Amino acid sequence: MASIKVEPESEPPRIQPTEVYHGHCALTAAIRLRIATGGAGQSGLIRALADGFINEKVEREEHAPFGVAWLASDTSASFNYLAQGAADLSITYHAVAEGVAINQGIADRREYAWRDHWMLVGSEGPKSNPAKLSSNDQTTIHELFAQLFQAAIETSTSNNRVRFLSRYDKSAANIKESNIWSAIGQTPWSQPYSSWYHQCVDFPFRALEIAAQLEEYTITDRGTWFAIEEWVRKKMSVYMAGGDAESDPMLNPAHLLVGTRARDKDIANEFADWLTRSDGGQEVIRTFTVNGVVLYSIAPLTSVD
Image (cartoon, rainbow, N blue to C red; front, side, top):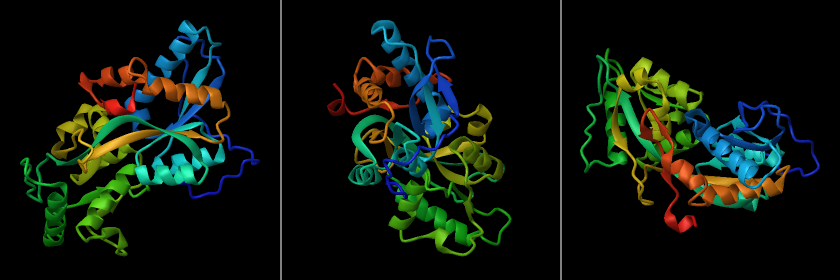
């Protein structure tokens, strides 16, 4: 959901794109589509999708050349960009908030885009796993967070303290870890100061780098984990990773929203159509790799043609 009202007559703010993609077109081609999202832009997936869409439109359908802009944002900011008309599309990771956004009139179309997966990771350094987390297949994410909380309290005055990094920015990752903490009856952010709950407002890559450097536990997504520089992964271990089952609490489903204030509604909807096609965007997602690893799973087959 957005934290601001939709004002159809207001002038959309001019947000400087983080990157602009042109496929095989000249770099001077005008921007026709603006996509707001976070980690999928950092991993390179938005570039791959944008280039694939542009090339099909221009080379197969003889559409005039154009560009696609990526606006770096977290899930909460993406809703506001749609409401303001600053973005035409968003990729977000919160089903309830997406439904509210449609009811608010911020978006008028929602499509299952792909499946990312949450991961609980922690230090591999000299103070490795101070919470002594178990990582067998029977342990749930809620049990691991309960172990983290207990260990954080027990080690609060020791030289090998347990610390957890929260992005604390209303991003999908922040919302996910907050939901897990709440589910076990804990709200560490409600305390004026916590020696173990590190509130770090930053984008996915930088937050994970900081967690690695400070030897802290954190929640990240698979796309970020495998797209980040190797030194980060070498300093950390994975204690739990989500799967594709819709019932898995560590599944991180991504949905595309088409904004009601999209400047070019036709091309926004054409991108949504292409993204959900098994021979279009879903094929790009299925084959998208970084460092030889496939980062994402395609949307469930019942959601695509």
